[in-house]
Amino acid sequence: MPSDDHREGIKGMANPSRYGIERVAYWLMRLSGLGLLAYFIGHIYETSNILRGQVGWDEFLELTQTTEGHIILAIVIAMCVFHTVNGIRVMLGHGGVGVGKPARPDYPYDPASQNYRHKIGIYSAILLAAIAMMYGLAVMFGE
Amino acid sequence: MAQVSSIANEQNTTAVSSSKSITLRISRFNPEHDETNGFMEFTIPYQKWTTVLEAILEVKKHFDHSVAVRYSCRQATCGSCGMIINGKPRLACFTKISELNSDVVTVEPMNNFPIIRDLAVKFEKLFDTHQKIKPYLIRDDTELESNEKEFLQSPEEVEQYIQFANCIKCGLCNSACPTMATDSSFVGPQALAQAYRYVADTRDKGKDSRLKIIDDSHGIWRCHFAGSCSQVCPKGVDPAMGIQLLRGYLLGFRS
Image 1: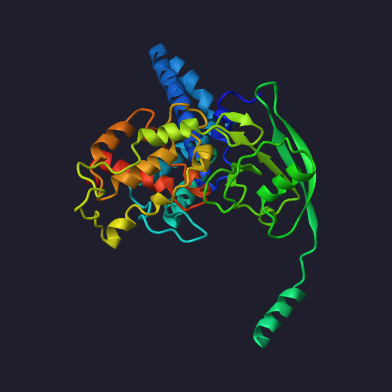
Image 2 (image 1 turned 180 degrees about the vertical axis):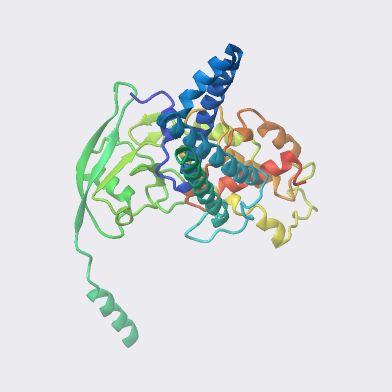
């Protein structure tokens, strides 16, 4: 049933399609942010096991030495790299850097704020995240 | 005369494009007695110049006159006929069926606006937020009194805001905004872009009061630069740029 104010809600906010690579970056930024928050909480729990002594620490650390553990860590590396690089792009944009200058628009009205510099920034963030993840996988599975 | 005649003959011999048809799916919902929204489908013939609004009016004329749709100028100037067309906010009068490249055209009311009925939505919230940012020149003097001169500006000064003065208050930017999808208190890209329009105007003296209004937890800081507002604007306003430049005033990069 349509709500009183007919808002799309979280489903609409999280939908990465329809609006190009900028909306994909917006979605990945939130996804990686939540993922890193979950990892951060798990990491605090993991490191707290040092209070159980050497044996307890080694036991818990073995969880990360499995195939699943390596894949999760590789995803964490990718999320970290993407969130950092894209975050720098967004911060620069928020400071007015690279968003273009006001001018009389000419049809077909390509928005200056969605220019190639920002697109390069988004694709670079995705590419660097993929490279870092592949390198991480190579290191972890190459042992 | 002979030339005019030849032009007329040329126009007469221009082949009319073959008549094709699409399935037009119209969202139907009356909040007074409907529990859920549904879709009604109509097969509508179209030419390459047929707009979505014309297709909807064809439905009203020949199939079901009770379809509620708001429109006025039919030339992308009044901003009345904004709706979701095949998943994206667009003006129905400005969107040709042929450019959608689909045999099925789905029209729904704009997101983030309360529905009046079918495709018509309420604009009270948009107008309220628009008014909230004081969309007029704030000065102690006026150019309307006798013996006063008009407020002069250089072309370079006009360039700073004229793009944002093109806003027709159609609401498409607010409909596309991912923050507006979840935050009912967010002031929205339309009002923020208009705030920039007046803050950047050299004739205006109300910068501080406007910045105070938008410097709010549900104001400018809720924008996360997804840029969807600028992508759907039918007039090239680019609210995303205006919002980021406006932040420059608040962060001290601009004066």
